Image: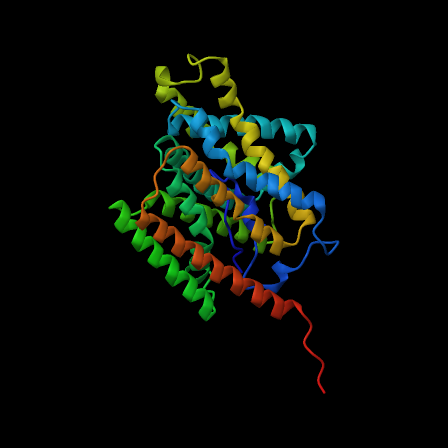
Length: 336
């Protein structure tokens, strides 16, 4: 079954998707070895989703860097740091194993395209003052992931899940009317991250789950040439120099800010039940929503209604997941 996704801004990479709550497969709702969430795991999860939620402030601080340049530097510095970490931890064997497999290469190449679209649109949303729309994308993401499960994996939804999806679609209609246009950034973020999760799910189904560090290394490797080409085309319009050492340092930090949340997620996923991960994931769009208000974006009454409908849909979806998990995991009562 397709695991529920959320996250990851600019998403961030969302190898996290593979470990989200699966509302239709009890095996994915069981706790990892140890049975209980540990304090370390919960703190790592909070730090991971908290960092992703605070990305709007980081990207806003990079102005006047545009979305294309930001995406290119993010690819370059993420790859540089990933290569250093892979070398330091002696993981090249894992990377080479993936690269030798045509099936894994193909799926990760498609995943690279999906995450590039996600990162690019997220950066565009921030630099153009549409952080609220970006947060909407990550709120909507679990609902769209459910639909992907139906369309791509031919999964069957429970009635309550259909209710949640219907409410979510109603929210999109309300927000479209408010904006005077389709919230394409939000929908693209949700679709790209959902597709990324689907591709990682396909890898796992083939018995070839790829850890976050290896995945990020291979994916950014595929994106390196387009990123370098974009930087070359921008030429003297680049902002890497000319805006002070602080600005340059912030652009270089695009690598650590991408990799660190992933490593924190890996710590959390190994110590925290997936049901807890599923709850923690909503911290990211909540913080993004707050960041948008802090950055001065406005919320007319009609938009509050639209977001409110999304939150109701998520509450219905989450309640259904928890109820289904409880029924599948708890032992059946003994007969009389």
